[in-house]
Each structure stands twice: as C-alpha cells, then as structure tokens.
Image (tube, rainbow, N blue to C red):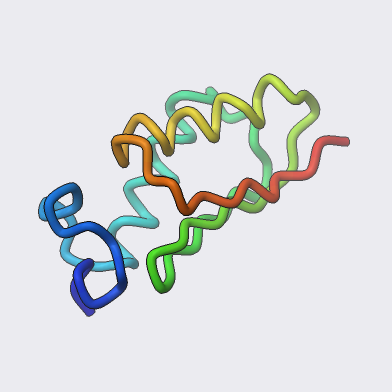
Amino acid sequence: MTTHEAGLDPGRFDRFEGETELAERIEGHIERRACGRIRDLHVVCSDGMIILTGRSRTYHAKQLAQEAVLDLTEGHPALTNQIVVS
C-alpha cells in the first residue's frame, strides 16, 4: 500500500514506501530522540493515522516521542499518543 492509498499526504511522505516503513522509521527516530526512555514502544500507521503506544516514566519522555513524530512527518495532524506514563 502506498502512502497515498493510506490517506497520507503524498507530498510529505514520498520518501516512504508504505505504512510499515513509515512506522519503522518513526520508531527509530523516537528511540534516538528519547534516548531509550520509552519502553515497549510500538508505532502503528494505518489509514492516515499514526498511533504511538508504550510506557514511560515521565511526561517529558512522552512529549519527546510526540515531538519526534511531528519533526519527522512535518507536523502530521492525525497523531494519537497513547504512551502511558507510570
């Protein structure tokens, strides 16, 4: 499935071949930005949505993960951050 078929703006995401590759790149970018502070990190890209799940000890690390996605996707509006802070 192409990013256009997935509902993502093809002008922004031409460099990604599909949702799986985008999710993998986002996960790697989050891990670099958050320095491993998100445990059990999982990213799902589906139907134009980006969903983050995992666990963090601080809200700061959760925010770093969200900012990493926004940086990589140039502010993709359909982002759901379900990382649990505990």
